Length: 603
Figure 1 (spheres, rainbow, N blue to C red):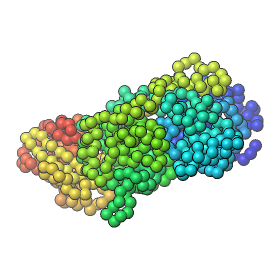
Figure 2 (cartoon, rainbow, N blue to C red):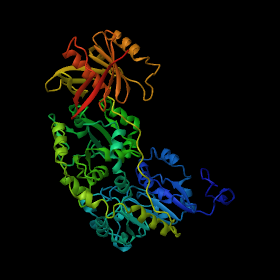
Figure 3 (cartoon, rainbow, N blue to C red):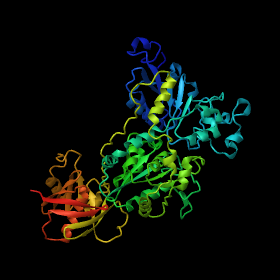
């Protein structure tokens, strides 16, 4: 037994130790976290089958290997070193990517796409069995010459469709079954690599089917992301690559990269981030989905540091493995690029502003290229809100994604399971083939710790209110202004300028001993910051306790309104009606809705 090789349920003496040793082996080949997400879509197709043993392995050829070990550990199936996986073989191996020595795997191999088909150009790496030179194969070996592959133009081959990726050195297809979701992909495979066309199987898209099945839960997903009545959820989305929305380079000849006043190129991300404060926080909820290769290539900690300012202004980073589809379903609009998430968004009818079309990366005959050519384009140099309002009002999306994502929506589970069991060589289970439902994400309400510039207009029993987080300038528009600052602000100096100071108790802990009772906390805050008129402790999703300098306190219940906004409304009403008795209820106009705020004196 070699060092690091496992002994159960496979190995030289596994028969002695395995409790169920007669199982058929299904090997999940996990290149990286990205490919694992698609494999996780289909592992449930083997549920309740005592005849099947799942195994996993990682070829170790992907440059994005960070996070893979942790994901495999969470999956909880035996993980084989790659060399042992090649030695042991399997009845069925399932991969969601090309790369590595897949042609050496013993047993049937099915390859799934880990996006909406194969759309990107990507040079083949030196995987140990093929180098870029041998990728340009000669006619006497049955492979195409460089001119047929576009090598004379310098273009990279299309990942997943070109011979460099889908054929082994001997000219045979790498996969026994190449799973495609739409006949247009099969047409492109026939044109690009006819040698592999006979391995293609149309099975639909399990990722898309899980999205479709979960759409009735859209309201629950929106509540999980803290989207309040009247708010519109805008999802920022980026694939990986220097020319992506999150990327910093790659002049693809588009508006995405322009010359600055000093002649230096400027990428779109800092421009977009600088415009997020233009959006009133009670009208727009902002979240971001970044490709796993961005997360694990640069590190989650680094991503959080890069986006710290946006997060303090209310941006929520969505888990790129477990929650991105729920966020996509919940979104009202997407600002994205040429990645699959933008395409899936359009496929379910969500308008997309394309910020990075990736013209040098996307294969121009693909459905994604057609989509980014037709979708409205973000101008990062123009105000953001009018562009968002335009696509939200229009609501139209190009028709391609809805028609071309899958030729058999809702049918992938049955088709894939039939394929898998046919390759294994045993009958399917009698129970229906079903994909796992998308889980309800943890509650992630927006919480801005950046200073809030608040514009208010107070009437008899109503207050109109707009709040802007991390605004660089005084917002335009009518009304009186005040500054609301969270106690955990990055800049403590802002607290000395605050008219309203905020704090949140931990979820489920309104009596957190670290803060003390609301009156005690407020008294300490108001004593430290003498210019502050009101202190408000948020004690629940819709409630807070507000205390003024005289010690008077009120319990505010927002009924769908952010309690911090309710506190600002009370401050504005009291400033406009000095000496008047507070009404038992205020109507607060904010975020495109009218919210009822009950005002109860606290004893």
